[in-house]
Length: 239
Image (cartoon, rainbow, N blue to C red; front, side, top):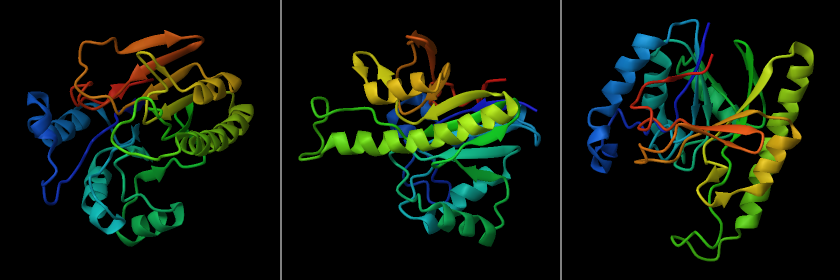
């Protein structure tokens, strides 16, 4: 049994109207690349964490074809919300959707923690930017967004802490947004990771930065970028 990770699948398998291929040659035939590489590496006994930007769908009904596509791939999948996952609903609605559509291999990481293989999986969407960096929107209270995401992450880490106390397994944290990138730091999230003694954190969201190191150390934490295009659409083995 092995654990893998890959964020930013950006699926639209039914209509293919939102293909990512316009963002560069690396994205050419990316859906087929994901499928082929996944099947080469992942078995039915493994787990893959997908930290956000999973489907371009705007509601849960539209996302069903993409969720079924993921469900048909080998292994257990743990999904985490990204900034483009507008289809994301409440845990209850998604669980009902999974049941109604016979989706059996997907779990949701949302205000909880999940034990798998030799690890405990924690995480939330996180937050990347602040008011000085954001130009697309006006009159947005970023402090409220960061506070909300910090609360969600704390809830997940609290659940993870309890599982760690029972099992002794390492807690890994997965975020969609990078808590550290260049000059940017989300101090609230970094502080929380340190409070819970997290040593490894994985994030997606960043695209077209293929020459940067795959991992870097900030303080006591190793951060790793696991966007699908950065990984060349090959699920990243964790352990």
